[in-house]
Image 1 (tube, rainbow, N blue to C red):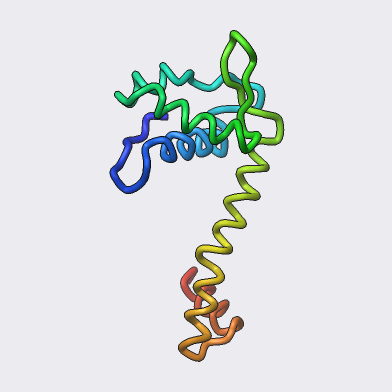
Image 2: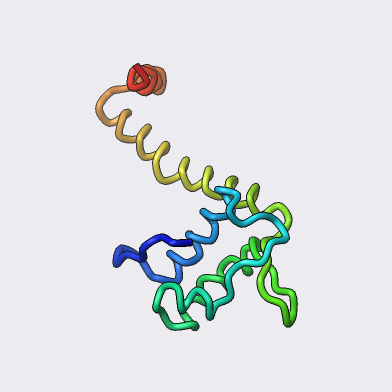
Length: 121
């Protein structure tokens, strides 16, 4: 969680994404405590309410859960949930658009696959 915040998107969204990325990288494991909103606020010099908004997004998605009086923890199955959501987003944001653009210039799916495979060489 030592990444740098940018101006490209809302800070609370960046906080949520950083926590998710730490879960994907096994920096934060299932049932492990995540930094508190105050710790996040201090680390990134942001308002605790902003940090809380990012954490609450993950609570709403079932990625984190609260243990009363102890803190927020990574939920069981969080990594798999994040992977599934990000794969779906990847398909929707990149693959669909790629195939649409390819079709508009006369490339079919097989030709796109060949182009991708040639990039590995």
